Amino acid sequence: MVSCKEDQNLVYDIKLSSAGPGRITGSDVIHEPNGMDLAMKLPYLKGVYFFNSQACQGLTIMQIKGSMFYWLNDYYTVCGRFQRTEAGRPYMKCNDCGVRIVEARCSKTVDEWLETRDCSLDNLLIYHSPIGPELFFSPSLYMQVINFKCGGMSLGISWAHIIGDVYSASECLNSWGQFLAGLKSYGPLKLTKSPTGLEDSKSPSVGTQEPVSLKQVDPVGDLWVTANDCKMETFSFHLSASQVSQLHSRIWGPSGIAKIPFFESLCAIMWQCIAKAKDGLEPKVVTLCKKDPNNPKDGILSNSQIISSVKADSSVVDADLQELATLLVDQATEENSQIEEVVEKDNGVFDYIVYGANLTFVDLEETNFYGLEWNGHKPEAVHYSIQGVGDEGAVMVLPWPKDSGTDGNIGRIVVVTLPENEVVKLRFELQKNGLMLEDDIDS
Image (cartoon, rainbow, N blue to C red; front, side, top):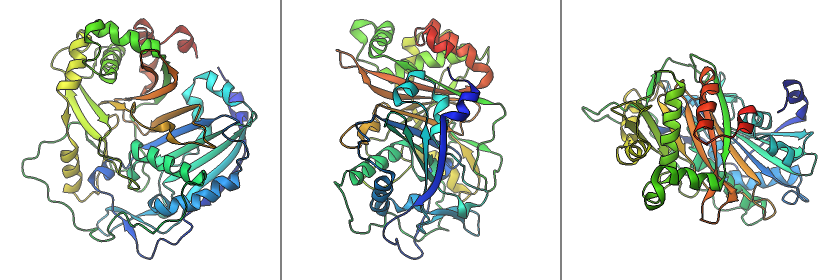
């Protein structure tokens, strides 16, 4: 456990700079966010990649920044700045203003940091600033490189969700790793979106059912921040490969273990535990976010994740976990097209949230976070969270391949964001169900 006073001294010697494409993208190139992008205007992805000293041997900040000039030729949209049309719809001017680079040092080793298993400390490794209130001066991507005293490094990112989902962000960073390794260099300029058609909104279908996974919020103006009615808290815990196997078999037994994926099985337990922590205000509707198997496409950023809703007709607290997990698999209703149409109906000028509109479960198990390599070495660990979750909360499930079992299972990292007054109750519910150990409760 690290005290608040120690927090202030962990990261120091902070320096800011910028990096942009090594080649001019062109004049008057714009990127128009679609309805799904605009539905994700308010949240931000915050990620940290930890590398040991071997991965960082001989690697300098100049090499890191130098490789970005090549990489950002392909991903020039992350270097742009948002503006609005006369009608108020946001669009991005691809003007090569660049991503913000932050350098700093840390007084701990990578191993010491990871031993704390306290994801709230990761905020010290991530330079975050929301878009606005001056849109034209607000970067969509911040990248912070921390030098640890052991010679290891961390890469922290703050990524505006409007430019792409977590799967796109991961693949974008993996591509940068290839430039850093010298496996890629300059290629032909590829414009990934037509620069025309800003005012051509789509006509919604008559009688389209309103998506329950989407919630309209009060206008935020040009400061793109989710407004919460209560203070939110984020914490995380690790599940070892053996815990994963035990939890799955506890619900299904040896014969049924392969019928329902672990993600939905874990979500069933989390749903029930959170329902108990809410003291009678159990969530009957939840949202599932999963990777579209056809995306992301090479070099194209998008918000293509599949968003579905699931409704329980009876008490979640008293539900059988097998039935709850089966419900999550069989009764998930995809709502992407409805979300797109609702946002486009008013030409993208209103503000919405998806994460935390209902209790939201985000499946990141198949995300290739460990595809970013430095000097041929994969990260020691990768942590992600979401900034800007609504009051109903969210649960993210990430892979933890450093812990693998003989049965093919790997560990998981579970990141939970909930109202602060529900966290203590949830921690003890998780402990009762074998998901958290006493050491995790105290940390």
